[in-house]
Length: 415
Image 1: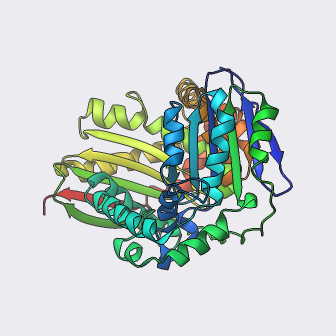
Image 2: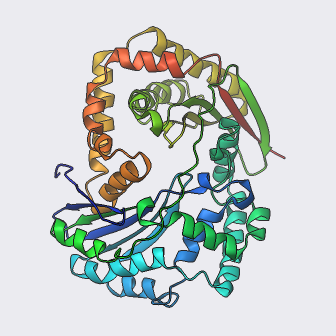
Image 3: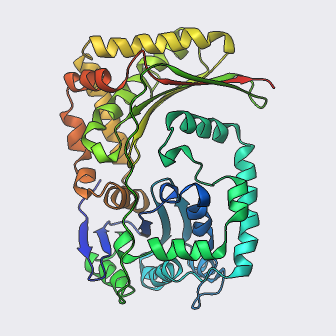
């Protein structure tokens, strides 16, 4: 696999272009907007996601659906995603088609018409998407866990927004949101594929020839304090046939990026493979859980360390106690070097395999520049993981994963 070696270029308008030649027969082009649902405010919760849909409804230059037809006619793919921290539009095409498709993608993002008829039609689509999300047990679990994990930060809100809020959104509000955030200084363009780097940069730069007013500064959020006791929330879900247990700890986010690496490694030590500690003990040996997973969810302002299990209701107390015991062990004993080295290799391979194709590599660059504002940190991620010691892991567990203070979400089957 080729070494990560992107070129960064900043235009006079303030746009950052990240480009890299990769010798595969494709080019991925993504536009990252440093504005997701976190910047919205409760009164317009869901606006960023709604706008993501509306961007594809055309411009004065492009009738609705024309961009997708152009991409599909060339065998390409396009889509978009909205999260709490960003909105991203992306397209993958053959190298010979990039110069024709990239200007159309940029036109959609910068010059969306947002006409009234399309706005009202798409509102119905969004409301149906919210209804489907509300009917999905996994989505409900995630949202309830986020609400438990965050009391004040906007991460507690659903990206799609509540139906009653979306129902009341006005087109003028969307126009203002678009004008506020879709500016060159708030965008990062990433191009990865089999073209000369300077050619990819030039193709994108030519479409950003006019200077616009800079966007407003993003809101500043203060991370919430760690839990000081065990905070429990229990509910019933009629769609479940087994219980769900989620244990949460508030941990550093991107604003403290250096503090997240050891937590990534702890997640690998505890979960992620059949021989990881919690999987081996609770699923393979004791058969107390059907599934168990561990993740370190890193977001811009604050993260959540997340342990989730599917299990019979009768095992809930025993499994929670066992998880706490494993955390105490991490705090009291240094991880054996062979085990640590194995988990580091797994984490590094996951990263390396995940950056082999243009789209995933572009995602890595776009995320670290647009959201983390630190592309170098993204490039240094393998080195940071390799440098971690057993003492670093122990320190992170002692600092952030208290066995006596955390959030617990329990969902029980039944009405």
